[in-house]
Image (cartoon, rainbow, N blue to C red; front, side):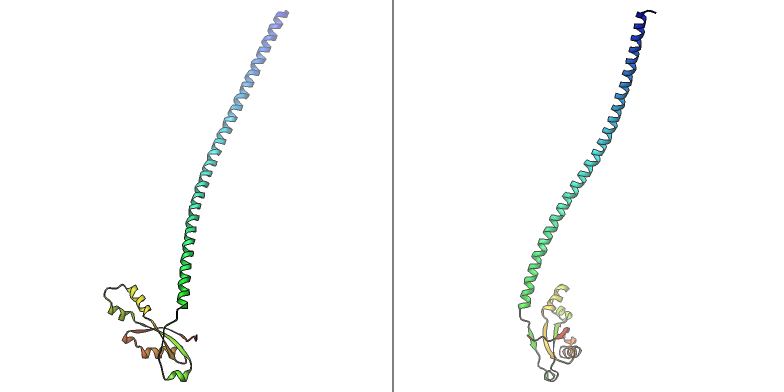
Amino acid sequence: MSAALLANIGLIILLLYSLIQFALTARNIEDDRRVRERRLGRLEEELGHATAAANDAKATAEGSAREVAGLEEAVATLRATRAEADAKLRELQSAPRRRLIVPDKTVLVHGRLWEVTVVPAANSVAANTDGADPAGLIEGAQVGAQVYLFGATTDRDARFRAEQRFPTSLGYRVQKVERFKRG
């Protein structure tokens, strides 16, 4: 065997070794490409989930902003309504109450005065109005309420005296009985 044959065998072995190395390298490159594609697929899937979560968060934030704006408007409306109601309450509290003093012999004997609120009964108001709504009748009855002072020992006695003086048969109703507050 000559040196040329050995050189050819060496070249063949070198060529086979190179082909094996090339095949192994190509296989590693292919494996790396598959791993990279799997990772890329997972990353794209995660990106899709993250994008969906971001869109949901954005929509929730926009909805919350609209709700907060609506709530701020409602709070502003409530503040304005409360200011109006407070002004009305101060006006009503500062207005003097209408009182009608009914002289009674027992006033001097008992020494206790009771404020009795008497209103015209709703049915007597209804008889005087044609086709009015019942809510308006009740409000009208409340507007027609008058406060009378009665002398009595107890609130029941004051109610009894008021019911004697203003009977329901004449269209009156005793609404409230409370102690007279001087001043």
